[in-house]
Image (cartoon, rainbow over all chains, first blue to last red; front, top):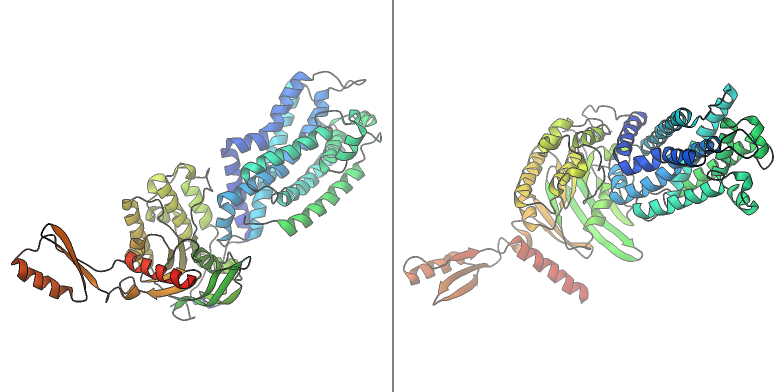
Amino acid sequence: MTSAAVRTRAPGLWRIGRSRVDMEVKALVRDRRSLVFTVLFPLILLIIFGSVFNQNLPGTDVSFSQYFLAGMIASGIFYTSFQNLAIAIPTEREDGTLKRLRGTPMPTASYFIGKAGMVLLSYVLQVILLLVVGVLFFKLTLPDSGLKWFTFLWVSILGLVCCTLLGLAFSVVPKNGRGASAIVSLVVLILQFTSGVFFQFDQLPHWMQQFASLFPLKWLAQGMRSVFLPDSLSSLEITGSWELGRVAIVLVLWTLLALALALRFFKWER
Amino acid sequence: MPMTEGDHAIVVRGLRKSYAGTPAVDGIDLEVNRGEVFALLGPNGAGKTTTVEILEGYRQRDAGDVTVLGHDPGRPTPAYKARIGIVLQESSDLADLSVAETVRHFAGYYPSPRDPAEVIEAVGLSEKVNSRCAALSGGQRRRLDVALGIVGRPELLFLDEPTTGFDPQARRQFWELIRSLQQEGTTILLTTHYLEEAEALADRVAVISQGHIVEVGSPETLGGRATGAARVSWLEDGTTRTESTHAPTGVVTALAARFDGEIPELAVSRPTLEDVYLQLIGHDELEGQA
């Protein structure tokens, strides 16, 4: 050290990371557009779909809303992590946020801790809103066993990790913030239509099912259906089972791929 | 003295950087003393920003030796960044956070930050502490940028065109702030388009053109300004007459005798920094074409 003066120790990356979470959450909730798009959108869709399609799934006594709730929670993972980051980061690259941060001693890891914390908190808020509104106004039912809640937990965590990394990797694709909104929303919408979120998955054309099976959202939705639908409804799945083992494998593979892509391609500057 | 690596905050030798084969910085040598305000002047595309961004740690150089505060900025560690402050050109981030939140947050990145409230006071944003950053005017926004640049108590502050878009009064206030930072011992590297700003603030200026330094000197002596010919102008027979001379006192004395008293519209002027600057840049560009 060349410094003879006593220096206070530099703040650690976790402390700065916590402070980043705080800033990220403030920025998210104060920007109405991002708040609506990332957190409230699934709730709005649940209210609309729950009000319009209030009949039961054919041949069952389970409402389509209950099926849709599982799809919305799966989509919520995508909104709060993938869509959120893949739009926010190109915007930050454009408006100077990232360059400013790179000029400070903020540890790189603290930035990602901030993003991850913001993703987790917005997902938790979103799920609570969906469940409360679903139960109170649409007679939706909550899982009745600890095992199902455990499935909910691991599918959520694995899904959030996977889609957060995917969001970081995908953030290099859009040229700017405005382009990001368009392209990312389109990607999410296509996956939702093909993955059994808006429509019953077993009634989609075969090629569409195969297409969706390549991507994580189909498996997230299936995992969430195993949580929120009665076990008897696994008969509506393609293989007649929830395939939770395969859900885990696909999500882990996508997580590894996304991690590799993010490490290789993530960039701070335009 | 806290530092032991000599009197220079910045030492640059033979710095080169090309983009896609086109040299942006073409062999720059530069020394900035500790505690001085050093201004980098030059037209757009001269290599100012590239040079500064290499010093700040944003860009890697192709060749040359660079030492900033005894450190190689090609390896910009957090410990290095804790010792410098950077005010970039204008940006539009931080929109939804308040001034106080923002300054407090950035203070948390540094080992021994200034008191956020004092920093906000120093840049003149006390009345705006609770305003969202998006609601600040252009000049207030720049002062926030400066607040974030100095909150970490930097030994060296980089200011990239800090007063673009300021009204004259805001610019004068800003200059006072820079002077007070210098008095506290902060070394400042300034790039600016405003020559009067360089003249008001800088101990030394470097004129940079086409990727190399054309001349370095104090604003008073740059380009032979102090010894260059003065212009004497006055009104005679209804027209303005001018004379370029190295002995303006003699000319004025002769005129005074001739007019036997007050000389109508008498003015004696030395070449301004702008005159010298334009001459230096012009020469360099002609040589570049030859």
